[in-house]
Length: 213
Image (cartoon, rainbow, N blue to C red; front, side):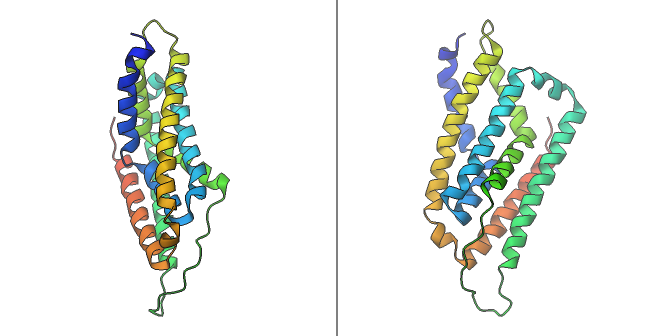
């Protein structure tokens, strides 16, 4: 088995996984909808760095360590769940702050975006604290590593391909959603987006908390 022979199957699985809804996609779409395409770019980059780091860990053999350690998996699961719930609660609180007690729709004000560094960090933490992302990477990559080939080098090549594909897909989605950011910036719409995205992030956090190997 060589990398070229398994590449078509690898690309198909990567495309399916990248298009599947999850914490990373929810966070990216929320940023793009509320703050525009530009604000979502650091989030995408943070998410993809997290993916690359998980792949690097798999290539270095850390997969077996985490897979064999109940404590490591539990810590990862708890951290991921808590962070997702935190992001969800923060989004819901943001929507609650936009309500108008007078009953009159307030004038829309541009939402204040996170700094690039903060958005990047959130994307990175969401990916690194997702035990499902770790478990998938650790189980997925070894299937495409030639038995006689260099494990780390091949893993990094595959990871780079996946990062390029996911980055293009997520930036495309962010651009599509961000093009309607003027409409999304209306107070009533922003409030609904905050409530919906916050609820989704909390549900994803609960799903992570109850995840098993």
